[in-house]
Image (cartoon, rainbow, N blue to C red; front, side, top):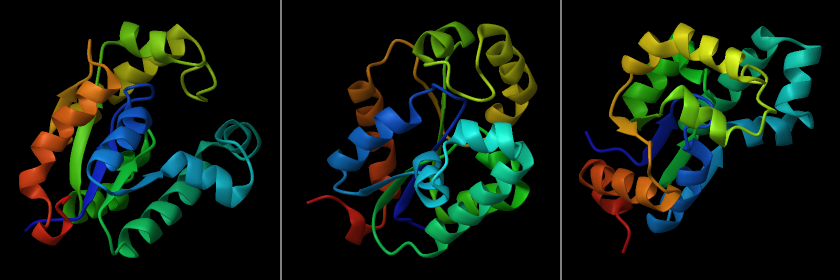
Length: 175
């Protein structure tokens, strides 16, 4: 079954948002960054939600918004997921059944060099290393792995575009 949504999963700083924006332009698709949408709808930063309400409250908001976005989708869309979005079984099942999922990854060292240190679960190299250790099996279990190591955002977007084109609904192919 062909689909009209591409989702990008992976750890923080793997390139989901940056490559996703470029990919959406090349596919003439809408781009949605789930973390940005959460911040817009809650009028709070991700960091604020984590520090004042906790990760569990954040995950509830994230799940609600993700499910609404995917179920309400009617056009070609690229969605950048948060690093922990698919830890939720219901969200993972929805994404795997309704979207074309690509999982971005890179070494911890590369992820850290890309980090702006405002990620609530990756504020320093030790936190990021521990997070990757905790989630390694999870990320490895997700579909269509894409190594972002030594790739520019443009190269990454083009690689994903080539892989996704045969899987997109025919009416959703760029002209």
